[in-house]
Amino acid sequence: MNSLNNLRMNNPLVICYTNDVVKNFTANGLLSLGASPAMSQAPEEAIDMLTPANALLINIGTLTKDREQDILEIAKTANKVGTPIVFDPVAVGASQYRKDFCATFLKTIDVAVVKGNASEILALINSDAKMKGTDSDQNLNAIEIAKDAHKRLNSAIVITGKEDIVVQDNQIYKLNNGSPLLAKVTGAGCLLGAVIASFLQSDKSTSIDHLVEAVSIYNIAAEKAEHLANGKGPGTFMTLLLDGLYQVTYEDYLNQSDKQEVQ
Image: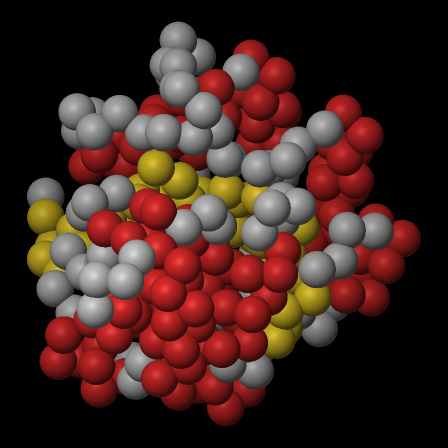
């Protein structure tokens, strides 16, 4: 399923309601890959923006009380016009405020994909779970958390970490590509949410094949960037990640993806 070439041919519009820290990096990452980003945050234009869009990314990294209603209104509009939503509940377990908002959001809005680290996804389904900022607990069982979240939230689940877990339609894949330098760049995980959104198809249900390809393509691009950085560090890597997204091919995915289906 050559979704990458299809993406580059059609330049899908991805509406990003994302956090203030990562807007520029997210937009440049989508452009490098071949998608068309729009960082629209006005409910007044949501129907015009979302009707032709392939997907909407909602990222709560810099959530404030003033933004809550806008996020909900934009997401409701996406549901109304049939635009799939990728929801990134950044640091949801770090505060009761974030937990309460995410609970309201997920009760109110139909979401195609929920993407986060293991601690974030656990906090969505377990009110007692806590986090230190955006950090994830490395001792958590990501596969079990993803399976449970998939059942409870009725959406596809992508859990990021040393190994990435993708669950949809009761199928589970573990993905092993990537670079440790991704954890050293602010916004790398947020950009992945936007990349996943760019692989969705607004007129079809979310396919696990699209999700696996999206995450793998991103991580293979990161591997390319790490190789080219040649030990220079996160600053060089961050720039080269954009180059990696521009250069990565479907053939790279076929030849280099490290994935396995698990029970």
